[in-house]
Amino acid sequence: MNTDHTIEIESINDQSKLSYANSGINIEDTDDVKEGMKESLKTSDNRVLNSIGAFASLYDFNFPEYEHPIMVMKTEEPGSKQKLAFQHGRVRSICYDMINHLINDIIVMGAKPLAVQDAIICGAIEKEVIREIVDAVSSACREQDCTLTGGETSIQPGVLEKGAYILTSSIVGVVDKAKVIDGSAIRNGDIVIAIESNGIHTNGYTLVRAIMDKHPEILDKTVGSDSFFDAIMKPHLCYYKPLRGLFGREELHGMAHITGGGIVGNLGRVLPDGLNAHIDLSKINVLPLFRLMHEVSHVEEAEMLRTFNMGVGMIVVAAPEFAQVVISHLSQFELRSYPIGEISLGDKQVVLEGKLEWTRE
View (cartoon, rainbow, N blue to C red):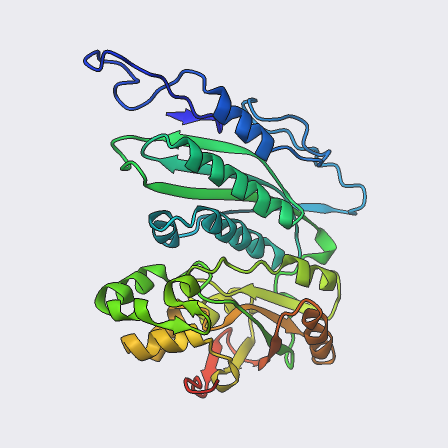
């Protein structure tokens, strides 16, 4: 059954009767949960024209400050990291993962995030968990100056087990057509700048879980002051607020969010025809978490680079004279960034050169 972020439960005395409720779906009102969701979805965003309970959300898309406003849309889910999150009580954390990843995917085009719709798919009604999910998603949106305008809760007994959840969300952003960042402005001689990640973010957790299964001793390890598990569950960084001050600058030629596929798979998505990106692997600051996983599991370097961000959460491609401006700007947000390569003439390839420095602290 699908519900518009309204969780409904009833008490049935006669469990022998064939009914929707006895089959696992109860559809009577539950004012406590509904009221809780209303509180989480309260917003001061005057573009939101209605509230929870309507069949769909109304959002005023009038932007006189934009000469030619373009909608930027994306759908995302937090991958198999959510399995670990729900198993270990990291409900709020995984909601931030999902929203931060989602926003990063549209800001690489220079977009301002506006409105998010989420979907919660689960095997049984657990009122407190669902309340927490909605509240956490809404909070994650507000922290990035956008709004959770509504969504869907789908209870699917028989499809998912009780306690199993699948989360997904979609976003709409806006950018002026003349200021879209799509990589087409990238030029020969541009500098490739890495922006640090804080860990695995939301990609590669199927391999992480395989490492944990094959090498359970890794769970006894620490990464700095964090346990291994705490280190792998850090929420995905959101780069919107640090980067938005650079949007609209002509010297900012391209951006890539480094997710599944690593640097090669993601930087390659924004390279124009006729150009290559040369990346010096020895310049990458490999995070201690990745060094630990490599040391314990002996996963090959090429596989690590294909699967994980290795410490590079976002890439900016900028004109040479603008590179230091980018680095200085991001340092104001306590975000480390540094050059790792250069653009040259070629055939739209990301060329990896050198070797990762696994022992550098």
